[in-house]
Image 1 (cartoon, helix red, strand yellow):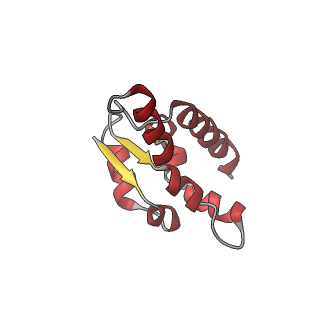
Image 2: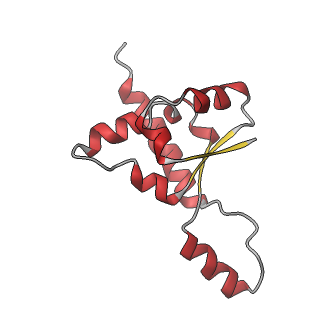
Image 3: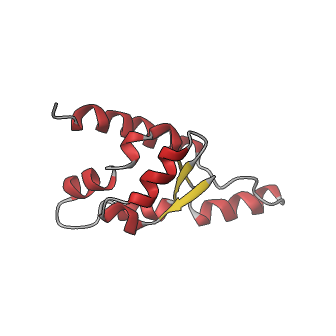
Amino acid sequence: MKLVVDQNSFRLPDLALQAHLSASSDNVAVVTDTALFEMLKGSDPVYAATRSFEVLKEFPQQVVVTAGTGELIRQEIATKKPIETATDNRMTSELRALLTEVKKFSCFC
């Protein structure tokens, strides 16, 4: 099951998101391109990013990122058929790698 993650999920520990991802490895958090940029808002982007990844860093393989709306429209126009998926494979791969790295450096055991 997919759950779309909005910027509000990045500001506070999101127990619903954590429960969703913990319930099954088949469950996915869908991060929109806009929400990805929203996570860096504020006077301290490092702090904001650290907080934003609090839940997602525990489930990097269960996270996907969508392409921007403009890009999706351009794809539809170019191919003259509806898009099959909004997932941006490159951004998904890069975010998963980043989440894996963040998890390595956030453990103060």
